[in-house]
Amino acid sequence: MHPELGFRETRTSAIVADALEKLGCRVHRNVGKSGVVADLGTGKPMIAIRADMDALPIRETNEAPYISQNPGVMHACGHDAHTAMTLGAATLLAEEKFPGTVRFLFQPSEEAGDNEGISGAPRMIQDGAMAGVDMVIALHVDPATPVGDIRLESGPASGGVDSWFGRVIGKGGHGAHPHETIDPIFISAHVIFALNGIVSRRLHPFSPAVVSVGAIHAGQAENVIPDQVDFAGTLR
Image (cartoon, rainbow, N blue to C red):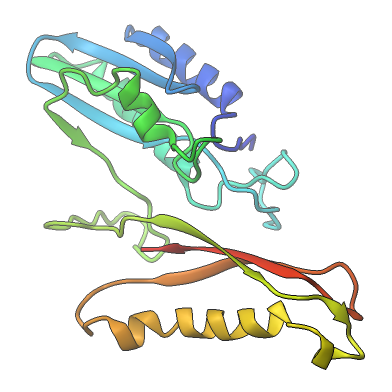
């Protein structure tokens, strides 16, 4: 109900850290800026269980009792479920005796990078979150999987993602005289069309890949051709 964007998960991380301390975990706060690391048990092996905590800048329009109370921010990717499940695992494991150590990694900012373009996982690693870890267990919810089912994959289960940003610079002018301009919107339309042909025409049919355009920004008035167009998307 209170989703927070990447590296701003102050309320979420505080709730997580407090809950882990009550379970008897050795808790480290503000790892990778706003992440949480907690250890349960001692010795080797050290198995880590990882969850992400951040939300997305999307307005939630669902009609549910748990709808977001933060306008313009929503857990559209299910990271609240990941956080809850990992806290649930910690609660169960705190009641068990087992050899070795379980480390719980609650990662900030999986969705985006900071002002240096670095996301939460590398920031946590820089702060030593993976020191001594022998293996990591992680998961991701999937709305296409029936409730009660668990899917296991041999090998990669999800695509790695990179963000890309583009800019087309033209020459603006009045919409009544497009012949006197170098229209960046017209050019961008061709660029975006071509980008969507990369997967279908440049890659092998059995090579999984996705190119998506998620944002286009240009102009201020309907009758003025702008000087430039900015657009951005992802590669998976």
